[in-house]
Image 1 (spheres, one colour):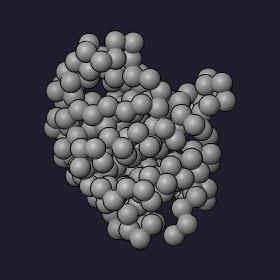
Image 2 (cartoon, helix red, strand yellow):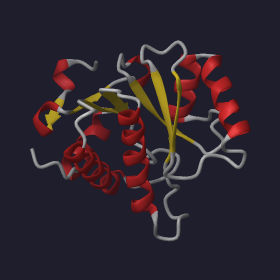
Image 3 (cartoon, rainbow, N blue to C red):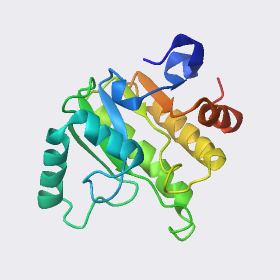
Image 4 (tube, helix red, strand yellow):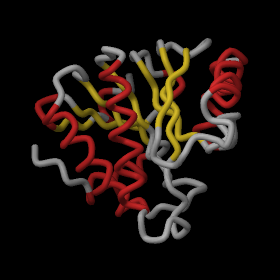
Length: 187
């Protein structure tokens, strides 16, 4: 878990924010901000594949071969083992590329969070760690993404008791501060 001094808590402790390295999170599942190919890439995606080792890529290739030959659609999520990561699983989701979704960016970003959490619940996973989906190379404005992500997480947790803890891990203190100024959590 991230250092205590960088931690902020919402929703009676069910949501925790911090700055850190998502590949070091010892949770049931880390969420990968994947691209639709599921074959690795830059940013969080590349870091997870590098730290997790080749077994994650092997499972992703099998998912492409058997279920998603055209790639994972934006907003959808799939699960694999976590390889060498301290987590048990990786939930791969594809966020929207900002400005390329015909005005559906918020809907698709919300779906990425919601579908990732639903997959965690379906596998009885209690603790899940998210990066800030789509705010890197995909260009989603961090301020707007904070509102969408927090609303989506709060709505899901309000309807589901399986997922006990959601961690939001930010790459930098500045990214976390932007989130804190723009989130929609009520507690």
